[in-house]
Length: 263
Image (cartoon, rainbow, N blue to C red; front, top):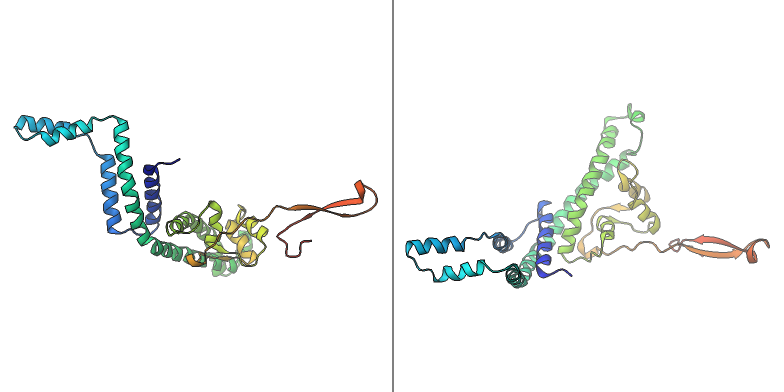
């Protein structure tokens, strides 16, 4: 089980992911973080300062206490850091919350701008068309074909920061399955086909081409409209009466519970 220091550092890592992607933090967050980081990186200097004070004939009472503390074993140091982290974490979390929704909306806007460019390219030309078949096509079509995999790579790269921003803003992010509902709106598309498209690695624009061809909307939702999207139910084996030959005259067949008219 992670201790409070690990949890604090995990929060800081998440914030770094979001800020590197264009998000922001409050001034207070940065100040608390800087002091926390400074404490963890602090060099052992009290002993040298004590020696210097003794040589110069200055007061050494406080420096002596600091030097003793510096020489404490790792268990003592760890205990102190844990107790400090118990106060630092909620303070950092409060500051993170202040900027969380705005950060998600910023990253959402960036993601959706990229998604618009990608979908436009995919609808202009099949990204998986052969290059030689497009040599005589208009420049717009050839440019869309060239741009599609670039936009797809950009969209994939933005997913992690988008998910992290959503989590910091309070969205339920149980696992990596959250990537799908955070970047698409499947609507009434067949759930199994949606997940198959999501997991495809084929083609120059990968999952995004497959999803677009299914009619799935590509774009990050408003946080108020985000909700998890479950994986499809397991296929089922059922039996129906067949010819008299075979075991009991029963013929097995597969049913997909996700089919609208599954028996």
